[in-house]
Image (tube, helix red, strand yellow):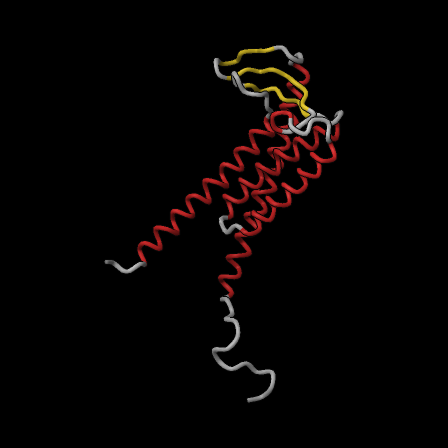
Length: 187
């Protein structure tokens, strides 16, 4: 056998061109969905914050529904006011979180789910970052449930994105478990 030639059956198997093309399309869809959802989320975050700052007086409560109030507050921290006044730490944590989400999106095979979930989390995070960098280091929280701290639309997007990731992983785990049960020998 000549040097440089591989023996038949040795080495990695080549994937068919159709499978490679399908993977490229799936990746393009995933990243396009992520970019579109991120853009929409950031725009909605900034627009609702603008409206809250123009139309709501700080501290004043407007009971829209029995379970949803509008009350504008300034939050220099993160969830529940943690890390208040520590902007560099908050920005670094946001950067790390966004990188982790982008790695998740890269690795996930489910194009639309990963794009939507990742776009919501990245969009919400960027919405808060833009508010912090264009203001005095705080975000404007304006949504409130009774007996719950104030929050804003970026917080909603982040929680929804994480919930979608969790539910997607749960569904996938159940699917894998069921597939394993179907392939295991009967007793």
